Image (cartoon, rainbow, N blue to C red; front, side):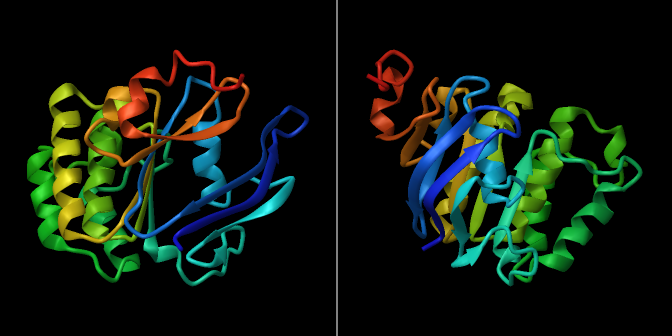
Length: 227
């Protein structure tokens, strides 16, 4: 099992309960989209998997290790790309990629080179000199090159131009065929998930979680799931 949410309840500090008694299981090869309106809790879900949110109760394990355990051994099986990653601007892209290569034993320079060309990223540029979309593309180069077993993508496609979004999803579908991995892709753009994921984790306005097949995606925002 890749991920296991066991009776997870999360409450915003001094605020409302976002998830209550949440139970979810993810297995090898699962590609799930995380969909919901702004503020529904998509990023919170990803951050809980990252171990960045203190749960009110319950437990989340990744590769059978508690995600809150900072000394766990399976960290290099997970790659995270979020829209607000804090990367020092003085770092050269080439050096950033070498940094990731150090931590991921299955890192592929061949895939890195392919993605740099696909996304038209100059590895000699400083990270701070890149646009928001270019920064995400540079991190996606590292992500796929790492050949991780679990990918967590949080709101990364919204800042990509149409061509880059198309290239990302085309590459993702090809990558999945040749590399055994799992993925959670959080977005509020339902079109991003079509032909890319198997199922959708939909977070309602009441922060309830339902899982739907991808062919039901068009009706998710219209149906009254909470009823």
